[in-house]
Image (cartoon, rainbow, N blue to C red):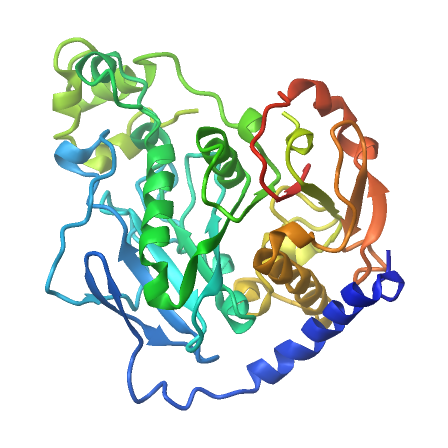
Length: 427
C-alpha cells in the first residue's frame, strides 16, 4: 500500500509528518543557556539539560534503590526521599551482565535508573516507555541507538530504563524459595513493574499524561512487555508494542540451584542449603562475571493487533555485508534515525527518509493506539501485515499476509491475552 493509495485521513497524516520534522530541527533553543530543566519527583528534585533540539533531557534518574548487598535478589526497593538535587545529565550505570567492556555505561549494581526525553513545553503529553533487548543477559538504556530525541520533537515523551540481567535477575535458588516463599525470583520482571509504576507516578512532572502511557520493547524487551500484559490483564497501559518476541519466545532458564552452585564453587561459597545466598550477597559482582556466568500465543486472539515485517537490507545497519535484515535491524528506524544513527557509518538520505516515515506513523500510533497505524488489523489465524522498507519501494507500506511468514507458529501460542492495542513484528 503506497501512501498515495491510503485513505485521505492517513495520507494527510503522512504529509504532516513528512513536513514537520525539518522545521522542528531548524528551530533553536533560546532558553537552553538560561536555565536547565527541573522536575519535582517523588524522591526529590531532578535537574537535566536541553539538547540541540531544545528537548528537555534527564539521564540516569534512579527509580529504585541499589540492588547490591542485602538488596541482591530482592524485590526492588524504593529510592529514599532526599533534599539533594539529582543531577541527571549523564547516563546512570548499566546493570552487571555477561558482556563487560561494552559501549554502554559503566556497570554497577546501583543500576535501576531511567532516562527521559521530553519536549521543553507542553502538558499532558503521550508517553512511550521502551525496553531494550538482549536475551535477558545483556543490554542497557545507555545504548546510543535508543535515544528519544525524535519522539520528543514529535510531541511524545520517551522513557527507557535498565533492569537486572542474567543470574542477578533469575537466580532460581531453592534457599530463596524456602526463606521467602511469597516473593518471586523473576527480579527483572519486578524491575519492569517498578519502573512503570515510577513513570505513572512521576511523569506528570515532566509534562506527561499518566493515563496515556504506551509500553514497548524489542526482543527480550518484548518478552518483558508480554510478561507485563499477562501479569496485569486490567493494566492502566494505553497500548503496547512487541517487536520480534513474546512471552513464549523468552530464553531458557537453568534448573534450580544450577547457576548459583556454579558461581558459588568459584567464589568460595557453599552449595545451596548452607547459607549460600548470604555468602553470595557479599561477593563482588565482578566475581560473577569471571565465573560461570549465564542464565541461559497468538496476541491477535483477544486484542487489537497490527503486524509488520521489516525488509530494509542495509549493510551498515546489519553490520555484515550481504546479509538480509536481522533481529533488531528495524529498531533505530522506529526511533527515527538522526541521533540514533550516530554510531553507524555511511547513513544515506534514503535511510533517514525511511526512518522519518516509520517514526512518523509510529509516533501517531503512540498518541492514539486504538486508531491503528494505518493498515488493517491482524487476525488469530491469518491476516494482513505490512511490509516495511522493501528494497526499491522503501517509503511504501506494502500489504502482505501473516500466513506467508509465521503460520507455523500459530498453534504454539495460547489464545488468552488481555485486550490491548499492540503492534507486532514476527521476526
